[in-house]
View 1 (cartoon, rainbow, N blue to C red):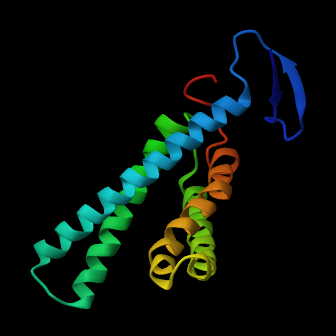
View 2 (cartoon, rainbow, N blue to C red; view 1 turned 90 degrees about the vertical axis):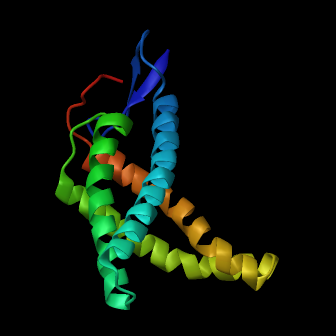
Length: 160
């Protein structure tokens, strides 16, 4: 079975009997990356709501603080989940934060574009509902590769 080795920043095809083709490894990782993203988002939403109710404030400041706390907690949890279960490699947290800022930038730029595109094909209501979702999905592709090849590029916990 032939696989492509990108580990030395050059492409070389190697023969490997027991190895999985790299495309299947990446598809498994990307699928886990997407599912994890959905679950982490739900956890962040629950934490944010819980913190907001615990503060017993009905203000924008309390809402913002609850959002910041939930985001910080879930970013830290997500780093360790991606490190141990998705990429199975050591990663650098500061690079992870940079990758998340890239994700934020991409989603922020793409969401209004997808909102308008969806509204053109369907309705403005669907554009409002789907623009962010589509932007998050599209942005997840380059962010996955940034995290796979730059953030979590160290020696792995297990061989793939």
